[in-house]
Image 1 (cartoon, rainbow, N blue to C red):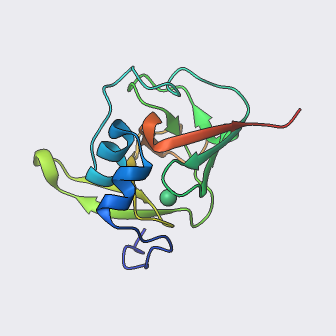
Image 2: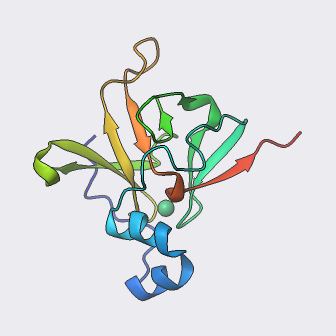
Length: 138
Ligand SMILES: [Zn+2]
């Protein structure tokens, strides 16, 4: 969890991100915002498929890694290897670990250690608006 110096592979100016993303996604992905809990379109959503970074399209999570959590945001117990970078976040008087897309440095959410103990024990708490879902091919 100490790869925050890794150079992102997709680098765009703030203006380019703003033009590409809808306002809520821009706020979350590029300004480290948080969507309202229990409102995200992938919170109560368990179709089979893959979740990609909405900003750059990197493959981040599989639906197999998703679990139901009462926290109000989509929750995953694991990620695609190397897809995410971790940054210590001491804002709002809390000590948390921020998760960003390793490919484009966009904010995704945070990771906590209260996930399912029969899996990794981790809970990746991710904003729906940071993600694009593609269903599994039938
Ligand atoms: Zn990305």
